[in-house]
Length: 271
Image 1 (spheres, rainbow, N blue to C red):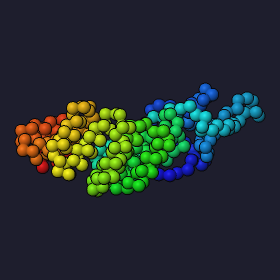
Image 2: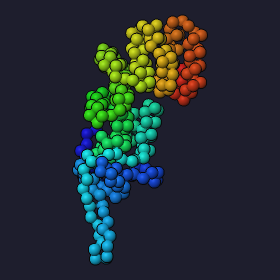
Image 3: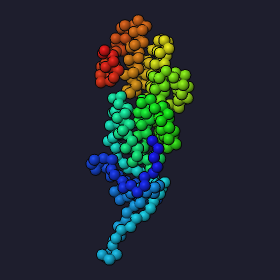
Image 4: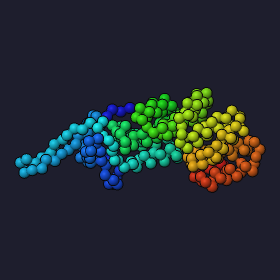
């Protein structure tokens, strides 16, 4: 999503209750509650109360550039968790609707520590990729890179695009992007996702033994990668079945349904 900075917009809180104070912290040590500020263009307008006798009392505003922010204290927006839950439930369109509101409010602060823009951006990129909007997802990924998003978040978004390429049969392009990402990915979830992607490509090519080994990399080398584990276990079980190893296939499916009973993969395994 491309959107200019807010213009004359009064800040609204993202939470329904006063969970924590929402505060701006500036490089000069100044601290300002968000309730005392509003955003105009690339600046923060801060309200000041002038104390004194009735004739002298009043109020004023000072202008501070957003670029002078050191960090912001902003509680996690509930819609962030809700949109992520939509992704987990394979509802990318619903996730996209929820996350756009967060990105709009966080846009001006996308490069400021404490902003939730990057976390929202990765959800949007993944949702776009799953909806088959690869170009839009790539645009979002480039914006994340410019905003210096966490490398693990960028990897998650890249993997979502690669996954969509695999699903649409664009294997050569998927492999090229995977090779570029392989050296950059370092967190366990990203490495596990790459292993699952590689395995699925091998499985589609009929290279079952190689696919099995790739799937098994997840439980062996990324044992805490719970997001990718159901797909890895299901893929391994199907590979065992193709190789005629009924016992290992059954035990792998049992592990899947017992550890991740509510996953789409567990539902698929029970059909």
